[in-house]
Image 1: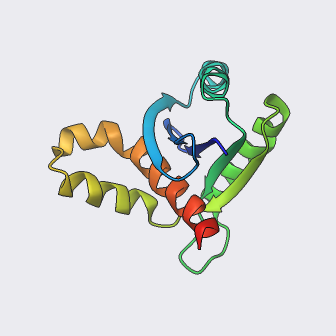
Image 2: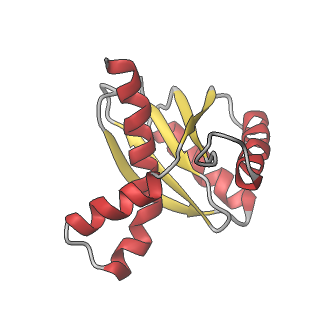
Image 3: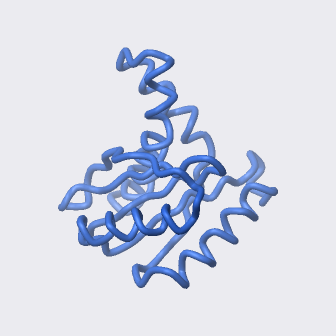
Length: 137
């Protein structure tokens, strides 16, 4: 299954995609969150280009698992997205994905300045890999 992941942000949306076998997640890009019409246009292009069968959106739960203000924004985003695309959408717990992405970029020797540009897509890849791994074993 071809899956696209979105790491929701107020300024940028990190985008990652699975490989054709649905085994490995790869960071793609970030898309500015505003204007929303431009975000949606680029997202639809990616969905078509990648023949996406499912979208996974990161749900930023609090450390105790509860839903906070950011999660409410994501719920609103998902509701709008479901009206705008035909691809099925699920949410997935994204706690600590940005921290993990930053650590991985640092370990890979990516400079702090370059990491800032890559962390959103990398966080989406961490989220997506976690989602796919949950079905593998």
